[in-house]
Image 1 (cartoon, rainbow, N blue to C red):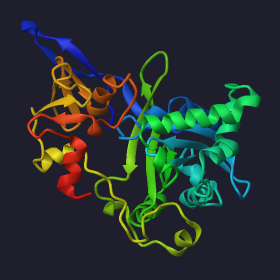
Image 2: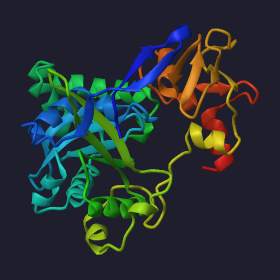
Image 3: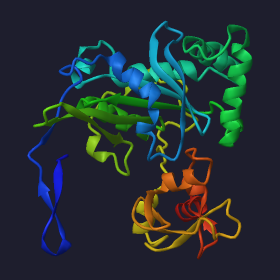
Image 4: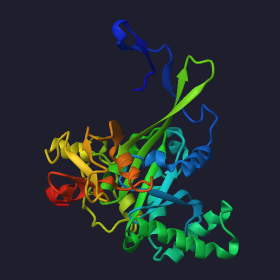
Length: 343
């Protein structure tokens, strides 16, 4: 639920919260007259809206890419772990129902085709080169050279060059999801397929003279526990169409490293624990403290853990768990959670 509110001054310089007359209501892209292409273009330019709280970064490398079966993938990315990412987009739940192919089955087939890419040169020739050309970012004669360099630099910066395309990641995006899609995706997660379902839902602020809209981004899957979405579904369809989309064995759980909130809950760290950035050898310039389940306090201001990590890394997004050293243990959050959870 979202609501608007006002902050009003009261006697004694105190402030209080009052409910605003404006209401926030969820709407569909169709009702707003927005096409799937409009959402696709927005996500191409602002992919950070779905990765802000993730531990990995994402570089868009393709749009409307044709696969082996001459089908088009909405967006293709490369994440900071070296995995090729297939991003399939549907405006609204009704768009899923109107398609002949299941939303998740379609993405699985795309992922299987991209799993055949073995080298960065292959990726540039089949995907990224066309993307650079479409966006007019490079002279045609230098597409391969430029593309290979940019992909290599991205992977090297994230220490993922040796992990190039060892796995594939699937991201499904819509304003709302059919229960059957969530159920199927939950089962795929249980089989080791790296798949996410993310709602990017438009909302209208009613009561204003000029219409204003907000986007609510909500990650439905994967969560700590996916049992709520799991129902009896036909499994054969997915096992026969998946191909190689993960190095995990069938039946092996998709393992998600616990985040800061879980580490706090399990007592690995406490609110107020001091941390510093791994690049700060003396720990004085970046000295901060854990402030909440997702937050860090630095210089009197509260930041998300990822925002904090990026501030000391050329303003670029990084996996902050690998950069945050907990003073009393002398280990990064990454080392601590891997040791404790034996992952």
